[in-house]
Image 1 (cartoon, helix red, strand yellow):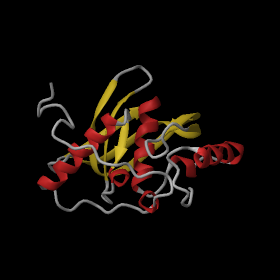
Image 2 (cartoon, rainbow, N blue to C red):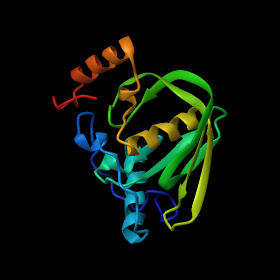
Image 3 (cartoon, helix red, strand yellow):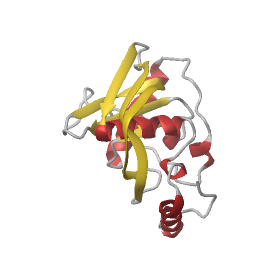
Image 4 (cartoon, rainbow, N blue to C red):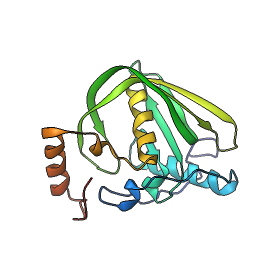
Amino acid sequence: MRNGSIPGSRGRVRPLALLGDPALHAPCEEVADFGPELGRIVEDLFATMYAAKGVGLAANQIGEPLRVFVYDCPDDEEVRHLGHVVNPRLVDADGVVLRGPEGCLSLPGLEAGTERYDHAVVEGFTVTGEPVTVHGTGFFARCLQHECDHLDGTVYADRVKGWRRARLMRQAGRASWHRGTETA
């Protein structure tokens, strides 16, 4: 049974923007109003992320061009990280660059080897306007970088190069969800 204390339990599942949707390539706007509508967006983000079985979701993926993302993601030590960031800034991405499998709810069922740093720090605010700093390592660092990219109008496919990109674009073109619009 769901209750109000579980993230997303009061939210509604929204349709996801898929590769080719112009909303995924437009930079998002800073949040200025930390009122009830922002809370509803965060709840909808969690509900949609859980319904799609994801580990992170940015607001533009549900049609909201605002700088907000949510996450429920493990790191490489299987420690669970759960939260959200409003107006995030990736203030540090460093350490070892690793190429690892990366997927996206806007490219369902696909993944490609994508290079990311194994450490990331994001600063921003909570839904109530309190400052927050989120540190991530390993897979969680990948998630933080991925979600910040979304808010800047970048999908992971934009970072994939060479034969990996060609393969990913072929797979996207054949995917049942592909709408035949422009690709990344």
